[in-house]
Length: 139
Image 1 (cartoon, rainbow, N blue to C red):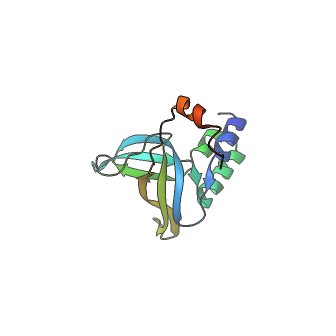
Image 2: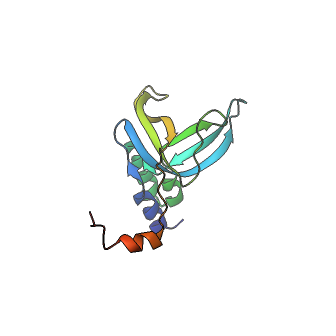
Image 3: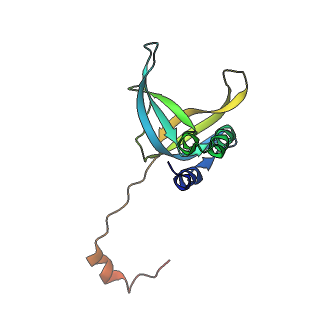
């Protein structure tokens, strides 16, 4: 990957610095079978980074490892058939909280992923709209 492509990808990410609920875009969702034979999961990556991911990406970028720099992002392991499994390109609600990592340091982790609630839009019949344009004031 070239430098400008890497910059474009990294610039498209949101920086998450504290726990909260965020609407994030799914950049990939790839099946993964744990080596211990545990649950089949989908490793789901989001267009977001924590300060830790940003620091890692900066270090890799500085050494010319552009592809590797873009691999640093917030992700989650969604259990296939049990958890919500978003698709690439989907925007979802992601709850992020502080949890201890393997070293016991509080770090930002995904704790919940849910679909966005949507509203149904009405259809437009332009023939009817055209007749009422002069009668209806614009708001």
